Image (cartoon, rainbow, N blue to C red; front, side, top):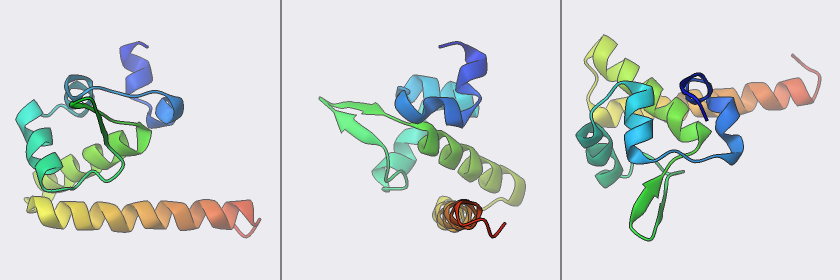
Length: 102
């Protein structure tokens, strides 16, 4: 997987990123990720044998949270809450498209 692939979350539907790869793809420090993992802000992340791994939705969520924190000086808790709302809106839009209503 090359760097361009990592920049596109939809490519990662069947792939997983490590903490270091996710941090690089989001331009954040690994400690930034660990702090948010400790708070439970990545519900789709998995820890297998003590190693965290992240899928495409985690990448999109991390990028959204980073943007909210940087652009609006949002607290991590508020950035995570807003990311939840954006994720739900994405799911609802996708459902409308599947139903042919959008």
